[in-house]
Length: 192
Length: 331
Image (cartoon, rainbow over all chains, first blue to last red):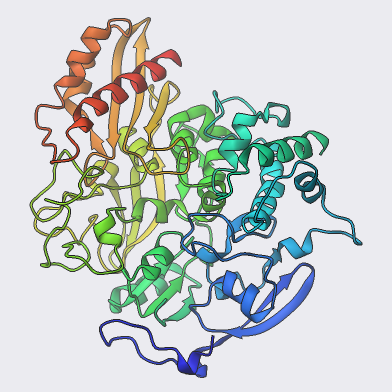
């Protein structure tokens, strides 16, 4: 986006923004320190895709409704379309490009291939990033809306298909590969 | 999104002074509601003040008397996972877990959750249909429009929107309070008085004014906390706002109700406490379904459904009954 050419529609209270409104930020993305200047309104998603060229993170609804833009910030899954890049200054970001190690796929990436957990693939980076962090949440004793008794500690052994479906409900798949996604996540969770 | 400036706050007093002096400034914490509103042009602040940097506002404290103090910057997911929240007030953990998605719960702050604005589609609409909440004086598109998801209690001709927060319903039922710091110092607002009915000024969701900053939410100790439950009915099983929801908490002697706390979501401009039913439920047996139904019905005599949501009055009574029974099963 070229800010000097950006004019928003509306009532006239919005004006062209010049480069002087840009702010310098530093993010550690997939282990590399990346500095850039962004407009305050630049979402983390747009910064990753447009400033850093990391297009594995997908922009679909851009409203926090589909989960395609899921990344990890300081180890937690969140929606990169619903936070400003400048608010994540100094944070550790992991995207789908950062999951492999020495050319080897992450166990969940491999499980998605093994179980045919996708068709068009557009939601897949978000599904995988979500699943990686979700398994860590379950290991950390986090309950879900599928947990019968939230008062009891939760163990990873209780991560049933119903639990996985609930915990992954923030990631939509228009190809409806849900059955295979649940199988892939269940296998990866059992092995982890 | 429209262009805006962004700064971060280092101390609460400076943040409050800036907010009080500048009507075009908005606080931002998790951003999960505000950024959506800005993308839909339902909020157009010229300046954002990032309050995530304020110290000591993300703590979750189990108080010695059995209550809780939840910092305004605590994230929904941390509150829902906290062992003392889960043990002392399962209704709070459940209300949080039934809201949004795992990703959003990691982002959204508790203060922001109770400040979130209505999901009325006319309010959120990018094409600027008439909406008194969005543009005061422009009219209400929902009053005679598609109002299936709208209020059955407490609405006005100016606005029939509902409050979308789940945890607010649980907090209202538990008589939680909101600690607010403003220019004149700190004050405590009972949850039941925090939200407003729309009246002629639906643009105001709650009683906060310029300069007010939510510091924490306090949940008092109570005999009913442990035996509590949140039941949420949605158009799909997960990741959706409530059609109708109920928070219930009970204290019992054997099977007999000593005291009951009940609030509904999805039916009004604020969490709707079933005060008359709570009185009528005293001494009723949890096993006497007809007595429970009759008691609940006393809170529905003033229900005023709209053209498309007459089903909500019946649904809400069934949801309240089930929530009450589930809470009772934990007693």
